[in-house]
Length: 298
Image (cartoon, one colour):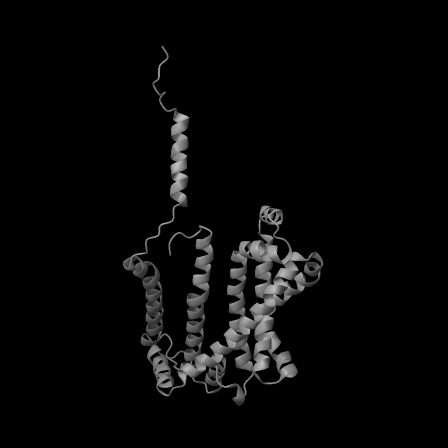
């Protein structure tokens, strides 16, 4: 009589089941929100401690008479007084808005130009051979070098500012997209062609989504170049009709030998750069990573 008992599971079957369970656990995303205490200790507290440490060292240099010349290094309190006075006089937000509005407007124009240019360089071999080295060279060229010719060509106006921003940001955006497209697996392109996604349809549905990590990195670098280009233009090109932005504020402090104003401008430039990164590019990076399963929580 044949036995109907089920044979005991083999060791290989147990190992396979354990491997499948482990893979399932890796693919499972935790949907719970991060506790506020963990967010406070991991994301808020470290930069606050770093800022306090810098302020402590800065104040120690003044208190211990290591630097006792206020024309070289003002005390943190002196810089705070200058910032507070600018706020009370209603000028502080004007400085910030003048530069931020120019920077974001110029960056959006660079985005409109750099994206199709990057796609063209990445997808057309002749264009890459002709323009690719030029884009790399332009990206390494200091943005301040464009200010004198832009002033001569366009004069002291906002068009000159935007031209300098474009020349600084477009190469970074285009090169970032080229890098992202170069990293798209060929299997994706073949699968897209099999499904009928060719030409513009393939670019929109296959190439651009797959190239997003490199593209976002190029956007982030492009903004950094745009912001630095704008500051260089505002420092060099001074004209009353242009208004007073952060770069012009920095130059005014230098002309007046007012180090407190100089430090005010430097701190505002730094704060705006950090704020734009935290509000725009960091969430965009997290979204791209999370959509690819590379960032489970955050």
